[in-house]
Length: 475
Image 1 (cartoon, helix red, strand yellow):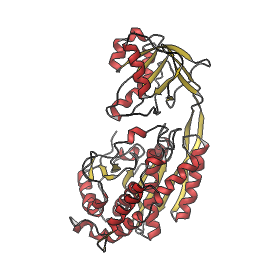
Image 2 (cartoon, rainbow, N blue to C red; image 1 turned 120 degrees about the vertical axis):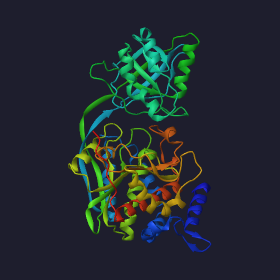
Image 3 (spheres, rainbow, N blue to C red; image 1 turned 135 degrees about the horizontal axis):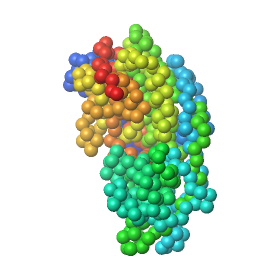
């Protein structure tokens, strides 16, 4: 075990025993949190006792690798998880059938032919893209920095490969070029499109991800190249040359295949039909091990429920962990799960998703009526504040406004309060959707603290007598 990890675990142990005193929640706002303090202490002590949660992430990642929708690796990992959940003592463990898309990458390459001779450009085809003709596509590249620049230079794009060289600002702002770049390039007459990888920095690591076509626009191949490759092609163009790239992609879409959402519970002792739903997505892209996105989040939420079962903590309401399938390229799992709930979601106390990496926990983001956030914060924050990282760029600690996630989005649109685990995730988009999203990027101490905070929040939400208010369903 690395020295840094040993030190981290020792620091975590210090949260439990300080000068011989048993760990206790922070002193402020004790009144509302007092009924839950003993259960919280048990959950925190168990979560911080060792690095078993991190070990479980590593075991799954190493055994199954990437878990892309429609692949045997995803289904084998789901079988393994279902078996382990049953062994963990979770109740009502089951797989919920879902049909998912099957996009197959195939062989692919991008080669800079001119002006320097054949130079390989690291690349990844984007999920859902069509392939090139069998012999590939060789064409001049037009480098643009925005959709507006492409529109202004549309007469230059015909018959060329358009590259969107757009530096990362935020994921939400920059990802539009990955998602919609092929449509914009095809409308201008391009034969293929490339996008600068959506991330803040790179060690020659391309980023994949999903993209979309429009029904009334020609479908052209669409791929991501590394930041380094994108900047190289721009420099060549700015010197007055026209770079030529040969792009080859065997990408194809096959018929939908069966998959499953994974569900396990600790059934509530008084209100078993009311639920606190926590989870993540078990699928990943087909490169790397999908650890920060999102296997770490899966184990954090699973472990939170497992600890309740192990400790015999059975709260008033049911706590359900759901590992959704097919978040990355379809959200079929989220849609199927929401459809299975029926028209009335009043029985769901809240839904929490962990899908922003597992780094040092900062708190939880809450979307819903403000009185509900305040009600939950008063009961939870005093119990978890010592677990949270302070003074980071990730913002204030605690349960703060604004949260949710893609898989719980369908429930949130019907009024369910939605939360997300917030972490100090400044490196998340460095690893996101790349071959570098592997176990070594995950710190055991971060995982243990995230488990502890998530377990406490889920237990309190399930145990508190008050119901959290639902919002008016959105259209």
